[in-house]
Image (cartoon, rainbow, N blue to C red; front, side, top):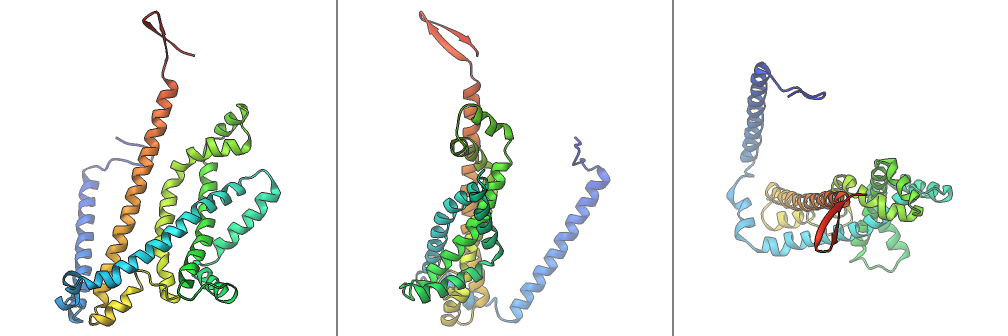
Length: 296
């Protein structure tokens, strides 16, 4: 079967694809062998550097799990604040009123243009100079503030793009039914745009989880990645092993988040299909013990 964008490969193309695949796997194998050989030469594959993660539970209870909890805490707070704030900013950018649309657009573009690390550092300085927040909680506050300011601006653009991607007839039909602008946005456009926006939103949520590590690098926030320093200091310079285990935890965490989002997206799509089938089903009238069908 052929399409405009794709042609089914013929016999020669299939053989060529097999050759490319084998060549790529061979090169990948050679690179992996070179990396493992270099690690072995530096004694980074020695059992004593990896065994603490399997035999010593204190590595997990003292460093990794507390660090993971701090990462999840900062990410959860940032997501809970950034999602509604970003939705509000995105709706504001779609406003018919210039006095709403222009200031909101300026705020969104301003915070999108600033690196999230700079926002964290600036927030930490503000909390230190102008608030009574103690030094114990200041890194968490600064990390959450920086993540919220940056990601709410990005989410605002995702919301705006998702709503604008819908057919114009959706809004026109709602207006024809007598709905106000706010009702059209809340009950018609946003529910349909959610499934369009979900992949981009999930990508941004993954970014939020990973960007918590910036606070550990420069602000002393005790998140997951920052625990590498404590682990290597107490378990014999096993930096590669610690980074590998921490990376696997991040991969598992983000894979779980992506899986849950995919399940949610599937349920939303099924709900929309069921609603569409229900709306187009024939009307059944029951009269005198019998049934007759009719349509509008």
